[in-house]
Amino acid sequence: AQSVTQPDIHITVSEGASLELRCNYSYGATPYLFWYVQSPGQGLQLLLKYFSGDTLVQGIKGFEAEFKRSQSSFNLRKPSVHWSDAAEYFCAVGFSGGYNKLIFGAGTRLAVHP
Amino acid sequence: DAGVIQSPRHEVTEMGQEVTLRCKPISGHDYLFWYRQTMMRGLELLIYFNNNVPIDDSGMPEDRFSAKMPNASFSTLKIQPSEPRDSAVYFCASSTGQRASEQFFGPGTRLTVL
Image 1 (spheres, helix red, strand yellow):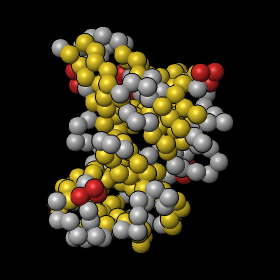
Image 2 (cartoon, one colour):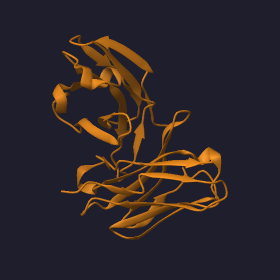
Image 3 (cartoon, helix red, strand yellow):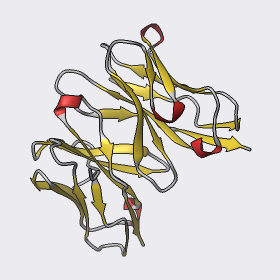
């Protein structure tokens, strides 16, 4: 069965520090991969997506993610975190073959210290 | 362009009452999804529609929950009778089959059942 794992429930970083949020998936073929961000009291906003091609994907707000097929991973990175990045981040996997269903990870809550 | 619209944004009701949540997807999107988010269970897919037809309702927790999509621009999620354990944030999302799984989320409805 397909699944998405975000190993880190909470992460705390200092403002200006680099960030990496981990995401691993289980799926037999190449999936479609997404990162969403949810600020408190808000809906989910798409940060970036990978469908095919270049495995390093640029998103909004200075985020990027790299698809590594050998590791079944799609980690999210940002070189310098801003206080406004404090939010919950969700990795999601979609599947080819006619379905538009997404499976979401449990989320990683990011706190940013000044 | 307007995004996904949900109403009401907040709903407080008493146990046993009927609750109806509403969603207007983005115009032109042919997939509509209903999710529930709780601290304990994270983000769960309840049901999704394609071209107004329910495709997968395996996530609907029990018969008290029902969802309809009478036309391409409107969907409802109904809980009857409501119970305190139904308290959660309910999200609606929409997507188009042309963009393989990329979903756009509404702001959510926070439901509290007393």
